[in-house]
Image (tube, rainbow, N blue to C red):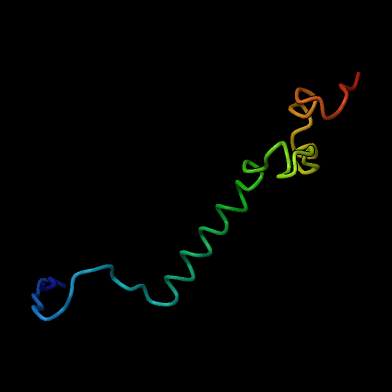
Length: 75
């Protein structure tokens, strides 16, 4: 199967994903990492895998922690 690149046909090359230059890969990775860091709090679960209340959840979501009964409502 050939490849059409910049208006020229190369019959001996395989079609597939284009490889990014190293700087472009690094930029793409950095962008994904920044997005993860921006939204990582959204991924915190109320319980740990062993079924105990998650301290990070209590720290970042105090109102929801009251609803779950992890902490008492402050008056």
